[in-house]
Length: 232
Image 1 (tube, helix red, strand yellow):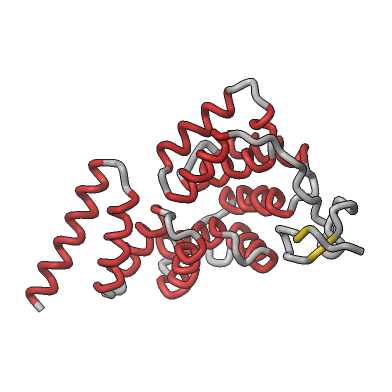
Image 2 (cartoon, helix red, strand yellow):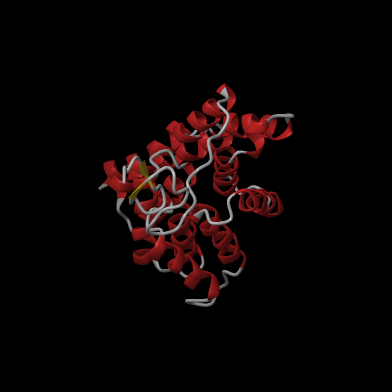
C-alpha cells in the first residue's frame, strides 16, 4: 500500500484511497475550494490580528460561497470565536454544521466537548466541566483552547496558580500569538511575584493588543514593574 496521507488527528500514515485513518478512524479532510479570503483569514488568525480575522470570517459567513461550508473555514471561525469569547450559540451552530459535513472529525468532536465543558464549569473543584477538559487534553494534548480554558478557570475561579501555570504556559507555547492567554499568564505571574516573567508576558500583550484602553492598561502594569524594580 502506498502511504501518501498523514492523519491530522493522530499523525499515522494511510492511503488516500481509504478515506479514513486506519488507526484512529478519523475522516480525511475533503478537498476544499481555494479562496484568497480564507487564506487571509487563516493568516490573520495565526498572527493574532483578531479584529481583522473576525471581519473576514463574518464576511465569508455571509457570502454565497462554497467556502463557508468548508471544514477549514468553519474550524478557523470556531477557534476564533472561542478565543474572542464569541456567542456560544454561534459557536455551537458552526460546530453542528461542521459535524454534519464530517461527523468523525476528531477536532470537531473535541470542540463540541469543549463547549459543553465550558458551560458546566463551576466554583466546585474537579467538577464535570473540569473533568471533561482534562479528558479532551488526554486525547488531544495540543488543544490550545482546552489548555487556556482550564488554566484560566484554575487561576481565576479555583485559586490554584500552580495548576493554572502549567496549562497557560502550554497555551502560549502552542499558540504564541494568543493574546488572552498571555494576558492571563501575565496576571498570574504578577500574583506569583515573578516580575521578570510578568514583564515579558505584558510586553507580548502590548504587541498583540489593538484596543487603546487595554494598551494603556498593559503600559501602566509594565511601568509599575519598572518602579518596583528601581525601589528594590
